[in-house]
Structures are given as structure tokens and as C-alpha cells.
Image (cartoon, rainbow, N blue to C red):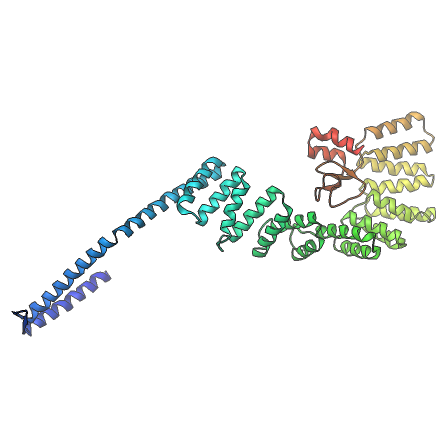
Length: 442
């Protein structure tokens, strides 16, 4: 509509000018090269306009002839890009289908035309990854580092390749780069923390944990694990520093049993039995543990029988639902020669689980009660057939250890040692591994 209005306005102005010239016409006389041209003003102006447009047409035609090679090159480039984007589409479809050969073929064709274009490099890197060619994928990811818009993607790709190669140094290198670029990206911080653990770089691990103290993955348990390992290193040189490190960890996460066990043991060895007892009594509410039972019985060993019984009954009351709470009471009653009460609490413990330790305890109670050899042997036989006692076991190789550690002493895997029984371990590792695990635990 606007174009029509402008055209009509232009036509009106042009017509007005033409009429004005017709009404006010004059004569123009030109003499050039022996020729004389006489004409009126209106025709002269029309001639000038016609000549102008004729020259413009010739000039545009001349430009068109000159630009034909450039036009053809541009047209070819557009056609190549159209084919390239078609191949890109085919390549990404092949990637989604897991067809590594088709994806690699498409990426090679695209790279011939688009060369260092980010999309082509991304597809080429992903295709090489799918084919298992880490060197080729790293080459393409390295090329992507030069583009600031794809730098994070490139670093993340190099990090993933480092994980596949299990190169801890490269994992830390690219993990730290990715973390600086985008600290909120999923999985980068956990991967970096795991690598710090493998490298035993506890200071960097603690710094990372402090920054992510609110993240679900970085629970206080992670900080407690780091504190435990550092305390172990301090034990030989500075037991006071080891205790303070564990106390800080215990305040942050009192439910992490290994910290409680080591802290209570160090306090007891350092002559702070009362403080050790308080730690155990407080921690018992969260997780009664045989190692805590052993330490606690040492702490109260010199107490009177009534005081011992009072204290273990108090422990039992704080968490009566677990077998260890009943076992410790049974042990005190048995030591006091009260076999009936010892049997009662041992049977309560057996209601929760039947382990070899509890069956052996029942055999001892039967012996002190004067039961027949048949009863005693029956309990001993049940002990042999019962579920193995829970222990610190590596979930990857099945190795049993006396205490928890961040790293398995056998297979050196990180964060794999847990307090479990052989029955639960066999379910996780598969039935074919059960025999091997039993032999390791024997």
C-alpha cells in the first residue's frame, strides 16, 4: 500500500514538472564539432534522462558480466553447504542410531567441504568416540578449543576421553578447566573429586567440598571420608592433630562410622577414655558397630559389674532395634555369670539376624549353662551355616579388611569399601562370583 502511495505521489510530481516545463518551454542551441543542434528544453531534459538510464543499463550489464565468476563460485559454495548440511543431518541421525561407520563417513565428507566449521568438528569428534578412536576424537575436540563458543564442549569431550583412557592426570587437567568455565555443569565436580581422591590430593578435595557443601552429591560424608584419611596420615606424627581432624569431621557428620571408630580408639589410646565413651554413646544412636562394642568394653573394663551393666543397658535403650545393641548386653550378662539374661538378649539379637558371631555366642551361653554337648554342637553347626558376619568389604573385588579405608588395599578402587555381609555382596556381584568371595572372606 505504501509503495502505491509513493508511486502515485512520484507520478503526480513528475507530471506537474512536465506540465510546468511544457507551459514554460524554451529553446536550447548546442554547437559542437561543426554541428548545431536546436531543440526545446523539454526534449533536451527527456533526452538527458533517456541517455542516463541507457548508460546505467549498460553499466549494470557490464558489472553482471564481470561478476559472473564470483556469482558461480558463490552458487557452488551455497550448493556445497546445502549438501554439507544434508550430510550433517544424516551423520547426526547415524550417531543417534549408533551407526559408527555411517556417522564417520558423513563426517569425513562434511569436513572436506566445511573443514573447521564447529558443527562438522563436533560430528566428527562424536563419530570417532562412537567408533572408539580416542586419538581422532581428541584431535577434533582440540580444534574446537580455538572457538570460544565451543571451548567448553571441547574441554568436556577431552575430559570424557580422559575418563575412557583412565588417565587421572588428564582427568584433573580437563576437569579443572571445565570446572572454571562452568562450575555448575553436571558430573564435572564429582569426577574431579574422585580424581583428587585417587591422587591423594586432600587439600584440593577439601576446597572443592567446601564450595559444594550444599550439593546433594557432596554430602558431609564426603568431607568425613577426607578427614578420616588425613587423620590416618597424622596418627604416626601428630596424634593430637589426628584427633582434632576427626573431631571436626564428627561434628559435621556424626553418622560416618569409620570416623567414630578411629576417633574413639585414638581418644582411648591417648588417655581420654571418658571422652571416647561419650563419643560412642552418642554415635550408638545412629549405628551400633562391633568395633565400637570392642572399644567400649575396654573403656568400662575396670568398672564395677553393676556400673558396666547400667551403661550397656543405656546403650541398648538408645537403639534397641539392632542386634549389636542386644549383643553387647548379652556379653556383659555372660561376663557376670547371668546366663539366663545373656540368653534372652542373645535371642533378641538373633531375631534381627543370624550370624556366626551370634551363634557362637549362643554356644558359649549353652556351655556355661551346662547344656548338653548336642545343644552346644547344634549352635556351633548353625554358626558354620549362618550368614557371614558383616565386615568391611570391597564391593568390586570382594576383599575383606579389618577397617574401612577410602582405597581398597587389593584392587585400589576408590570409595568401594562398605560395611556389608557376604550374602548382600554376592547378590551385587553375581552368583558366579560368590565362591571366590567366600574364599576371600574365610
